[in-house]
Length: 208
Image (cartoon, rainbow, N blue to C red; front, top):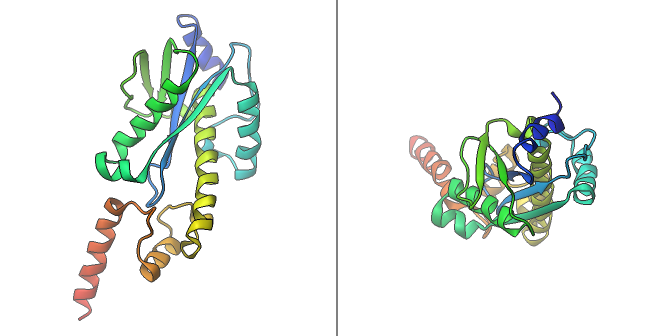
């Protein structure tokens, strides 16, 4: 079954089928992004898949194609401050809720990637691995991922010493080295760094 065929099954019961996904739950820095996408029943985009399975070049190309061919699309965020206030899971749900509610139409059903759904005033269904099963979820995953990567490139210009353009805020060896050298930037999620700082403190005490 193709990703478009997967969505077609839902159109037998629902007219407006929306796919929704987020990007940026795992990184140590930056906002979390989410996108919502609605396609016409006849729209099929070649090569669309879970954003994590695609090259950056392919994602960039599909990003423009999705925006051109989708009936409706929206990209929204939840901020670092909100992540620190209500935690990352709640913020991922909040960003998805914002994306869906920003659409100019109310979907009849929202297919959400994962095992949890945001609180929406419409039918929702959580689909584990949905970004590899559903065309509209896969499209949302691509929009969210590319938008977040572009945002992190702008963050990198603002805070060049952390080299965000290379790791996009994820916990790579280079990123931790930059944190060790410069400390946390204003866009770092302090709650995500607590465990790392605790381990660092333990090591320092052991080495004394």
